[in-house]
Image (cartoon, rainbow, N blue to C red; front, side, top):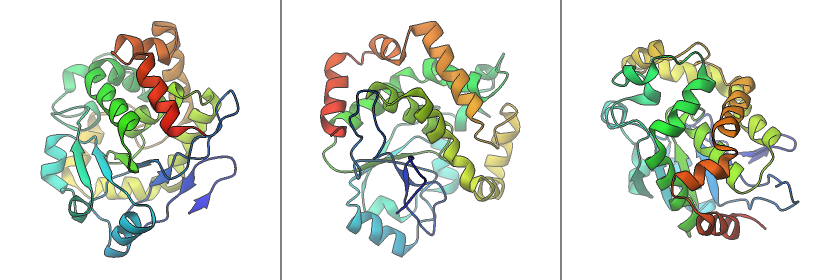
Length: 251
């Protein structure tokens, strides 16, 4: 693994461009997110045999949470990871990716990616809450992923890190790390006709990971719900779930 100073550890894989360990982040009260427990990633369908050996052997990956739509899975597949780990398909947008084609009505009034992320939090409240419960209860290492590993995956990361007490500036910096390989990520998306159509429907900034979008998203959460904890309460994620998250994930 390679580490950006003070930020997440990258897992260098041949078939992924945005696979990283959320471990290592510090909470506001000085605790540390344990390494090797929760990972975030872009699509896993291009993993090589060497990648698969590393994930199943060195990392011991047990569960893959696939946030992509049914159509995405049908179009581009899951790859051989489905033979090495338990797949939990929890689409945030069952009809299409990231609220794009097939969910156009949901995009009315969406000006930028920060707006889109806030819309996700309401539109996909139930599946997001389910993902959080899986992360709270899983014994083996887990990765959650979408296509680019920055939008749906970025919202889940922001929710998770907020609920265990990681400071806002760290959450924003973690989101912006997707810029490291953004050209490779975008080229892969653009190589598939289905993703080209979806990206055309998304707001300006969809091909970037601009930290101001994550900042505006978190500000809207505070303005509407008081905090991410306030949103979680409304989503049925009570104190006992947050306590399990902290017990499992924090040193």
